[in-house]
Length: 413
Image (cartoon, rainbow, N blue to C red; front, side, top):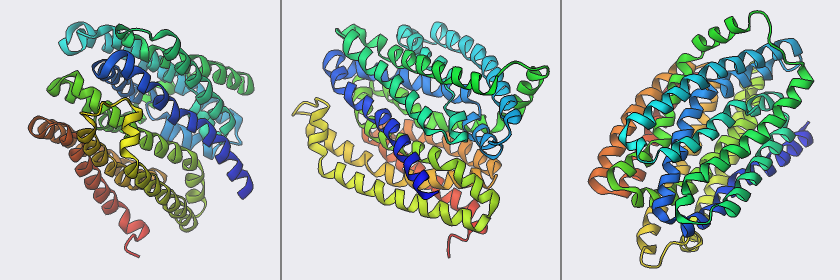
């Protein structure tokens, strides 16, 4: 059993390494060709897509994965769950398309770079198709890695082959979307054949029911996405695209940690849910062991990045006259993953213990507060304000999570 888990982690890790490394490969090239201003615009479009992705996922990566994990030996339940969730996603993508069109044509901030947002929407279409949430519930890590590797290979190839001049920044996110669409279609076709996925009589009714059941959780995740992905839009609005480009370079490093933490969250989530469902005491003990070892790994990576700050920034083609100021911002940003690792672990436990309602309340409240704090800090103290605000919010969220969990798992003991 232990050997199987190690093998799965290695397989899963290979795909996730590609996921983590691919943005780091293309970013120096994008800075050289498109400049920091172009990179800022790409980052704004990417954040726009990520916010919409939260809506198109609509709880599938939380409750959908959990249901498939628990019922993994019942093919009929899995079949109905997959089909009903995809029908629900089709409803959502239509709504999101009209929402995106409205923003791009009627809101000046979006209208002036409408091509970036149109091409970024391809990534949302890819996320609609993406069956990774199913493979996570089934703990089929070979398919998850396959989807990640193929999608990122197409993305990296598209950037290096077709981005040749400054104005090509508008296409950067399109290659990310096309890669995800193609790889996800292959994975979904394999599931259609395996489970004989077909529309059934009451699928529309079940899809509408899912929309109602998952509304609160998705609403909270939407606010969480505002906290995670809107800062670059706020920075672009307040300080311009050049400042947004500077933020995007540092954010990419922080996002690498976030992507890894989300990967680790997803890898052990199904197992944590199953173990806690079987035995609360043993489940929490294993959760603590997994996340404790992971935190030590994160701490080591942060120390290494702190020591190698100048070399990392030079890799991203930061000019020598900007190096000192960017090094300060970078080291400030490196504090964020130390708190983020704790909040991710505690969030996982909240879901596994069915404390969704408390999570929703915390997420909505802290996300609204965070946007206000980030805007205030950036406006008054510049780029460093974005990182300071994020640190403050992460600490606040951890304290709130602990308050909810303490009576259950006795964190004080």
